[in-house]
Length: 377
Image (cartoon, rainbow, N blue to C red; front, side):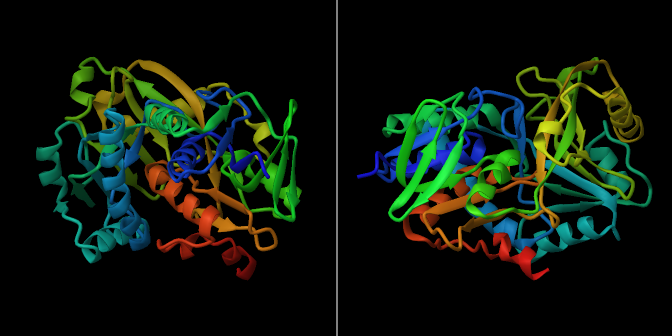
């Protein structure tokens, strides 16, 4: 008999959520993390992440219609405040494809929203500056998730349901067995009926051992946190999340939360062939590029830098997620809900990964995320 029912590799947002949902389903769960549980070398730990309905594809909106209530339920179960409603704005030229598709998707899915002219938006959001040829879309349910607290909450609840969590425990090898899988670490060999791989930018290092290489590219993304003179004006819940859809760059911003400072960053960054090549040192040129955006559209945010850090995106060619079952070894499930927009789905995806691991299917439509779309391209 295997020592565990399910072993999860990677304790970021997705792995922590999967540990909670699997252990809640009475599975004997082992969650392995190669670094410290709160490390900042990956994609999941930080003050905040965006949560929103505003998406260019209706498939994501449908999933968010389930994810929002699941976050509220997690707050009730845990007693933790995880979601702060701020409202949010998307802005850009009306003919920019992603901006146009976002508006169309909101309309098609009947998500309440306001379409504003630049002057109307200027009146409602006086700290912003919008070009005359722009359009602005406001959606009230935009908000922020307390990212690191969300991860910690999933793990704490998982442990309450009996999960074992081992940090600083890298995986040396994965060996499929006729009736399960064997995971070797520096200190032990663990066996389980199933394995769930949620390793972010390190996903291919693990999957290549079982014959799969996904088209994943690590990106080095610089985050900048600014401290305007009147920081309270830029703080949650009163200051909105924003996403710009501009031809020259896509930017986003998150209000200050618990004194974090106003967060502004590019959606994207410099690619690396392998995560080991990522340089975590600050890039002054990148920070200056962020400042140029602020001077044009958010002049009060061109302020002293409070701090900066590097976050990883793990990009697919189409920016959609990957979530699937190994075609040869059905006991191996993997997910890369990535490309810089996955966190908001994590508690839902933990449930979906539980479905895939235990039954091989899910009631949710994840056809957009199957890996064979790349084989057919």
